[in-house]
Length: 264
Image (cartoon, rainbow, N blue to C red; front, side, top):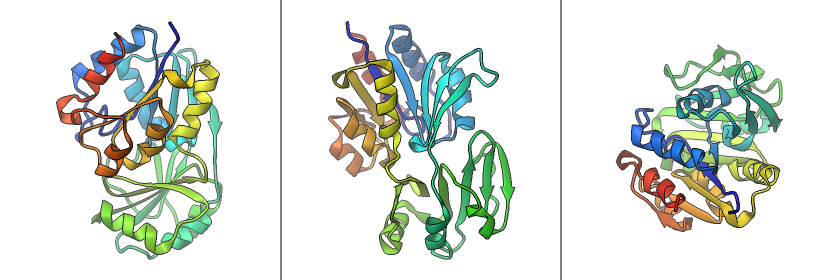
């Protein structure tokens, strides 16, 4: 039988809002991986916050796509951190930062430093960023190329940020607005799907043997990319609209029946 690849988002798909994973979900992911399917985590999280979840799942071999496609790593238990970086795609964050500056009251910005942490314009809530977090002057945020820029506000909403993006007109980048007032900006042309396509080719999986499950706007590209696309029940309507199927929400372990169906 032809090998298959299943791309899985983390937050809102595998992880509930409290950041916890149901044992039933963990068991289903393990079962699919042990059956020989290529399970590829595809997340907006950085590699530092992704690897503890990968370890919890017991995945030691394979690939992970992080930072919305800007970072691709191969899992290898013989490496000191359990992985090696295959690709890092960066861009000049300066133009985007200039457009965002002063565009929303109380907003803060984080610029990702792969494998290290983040440079930030001001403090983020505890637990939102993992790794070394350094508060630096705004002008220094754009001093070097970046994989991702995160713009967040404790007072806005997702709709506010969708309207903000329209108003300021972000160009020459890829961006995705999260469930809350959280905006991720990546290099132009870079998405979870662009990275997954490289992984698919590396694994010699036929396009028809791909599937993807996600719940947010940064999953739109992978739902277009996969031969079988599934939106979580907690996804926004625009995400559900482009998926082939809609499953239960994350609080009801909606990922489990999808994974079980791959074992038939």
